Length: 255
Ligand code: OAD
Image (cartoon, rainbow, N blue to C red):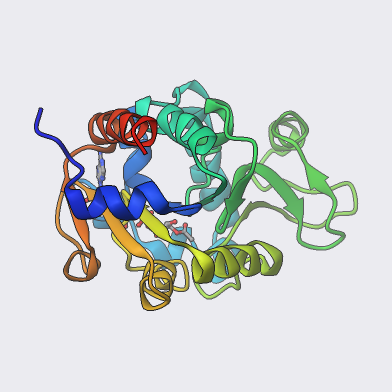
């Protein structure tokens, strides 16, 4: 395989103390979790306003709850792939490493990443829309199985929803603040497997770039980000990232 890292990239990477990574659905594609956009993406077949908005949930709680349960069941049997595990290794090479994800699947954590900024929440938790009581997967299964109509109800009577950010909702403030601050200070920013279409997460690579970061994109296709990337690595994340990491490691060994 050709070297991924050119001389310019070597220089920028070799000097970088602060590296920020933003991941999207593409990083989990090789684990068997469908992406949202692109060929066969979930949003090419399903209506996001029905399945990923509070209005849709309110209108059709049973359908939306079932859909999230179905996705959770799929995710639970999927395994992290080589891209997730490579990021665990990459973290060890960098003085200040920040991992930001738009994914709700928890695969970074299952791969071993300890500190993941989850901008869009997590499908592994649910909470009551009335009293805010939190439900783990096991606790949620109990109330879900108890309901006769697939509407999960809290002990207080409120409806229980997944702890994910839906269209029209704000991102968790503390998570976005950390992500924003890290992006402002990044020396190298890697955008991996994201179409960069959903803001404000999609703004982060450009914020980093405007502050002088070296922007690297890994994707199977070009995106709106590609014209701004200093380095575009075309291919599947689970193939590109391990190679990238090997080259980065040998680069550091020679610095
Ligand atoms: P998208 O589905 O919009 O984009 C996935 C990107 O991954 C696309 O650009 C693909 O080309 C790329 N891709 C697919 N397979 C890949 C692979 N093996 N290796 C590398 N790249 C690959 O997903 P996101 O950008 O994450 O929001 O979408 C952002 C948000 O939109 C999601 O978090 C979700 C969705 O609506 C919420 O649920 C709030």
